[in-house]
Image (tube, rainbow, N blue to C red; front, side, top):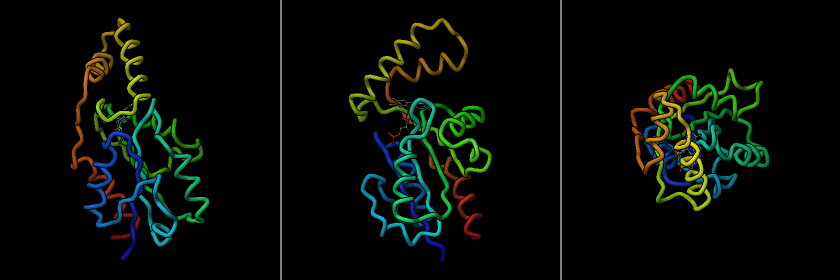
Amino acid sequence: MAEIVIIYTSETGMTKQYAKWISKELDSDCLVLEEVKAEEFLHADLIVFGAGIRAGRMRKLKSFHSKMNKSGWSGPVVYFATGGAPYDEQTVRAIVANSFHSSETSSVPFHYFESGLNFEKMKIRSRAIMRVYKMIMDGKKEKSEAAMGTRQALNGSYDHSSPDYIRPLIKDVHKRINV
Ligand SMILES: Cc1cc2nc3c(=O)[nH]c(=O)nc-3n(C[C@H](O)[C@H](O)[C@H](O)COP(=O)(O)O)c2cc1C
């Protein structure tokens, strides 16, 4: 049977929750990027890597790729990212374009899952950034649904995560390992 390993990084627990749901569904190890050792993933046939979105791009991709390169592992990777914004094809396209090299954007296996915001668990720096962002958004006169939604979202913690959202990723992984 093919071996799948989930590697994730998570600041406030949102990405961790999705990583746990995925690992349960795929019956695979679930490891933290900052702690994982090469011997824990070198045997994998496929790695699923997940991180949160920061200012429109996936966090810690460089760090993940550097760890993989140093270990000599070069198998297939399926990526997922979690973010406070609702799923929207245009938003997802923009995240892929901001996160990956232009030569990869049309082919990279990427899945986006809506999560939320957890101000209580954010690091001080993140909370400060969010405060500034909220001030900027509050100062804008824009009344579009998206702008109103963003303003509303910045008012406090919320969690729209759902295990239902991981279905396309599970299907994608199964297809790639020929289940
Ligand atoms: C400083 C900061 C910037 C963020 N930028 C975005 C963003 O551009 N788009 C988005 O959808 N979510 C954004 N978020 C929300 C996070 O992506 C979301 O909470 C994510 O699930 C966090 O995952 P983690 O805490 O497990 O790392 C941002 C959060 C912070 C703290």
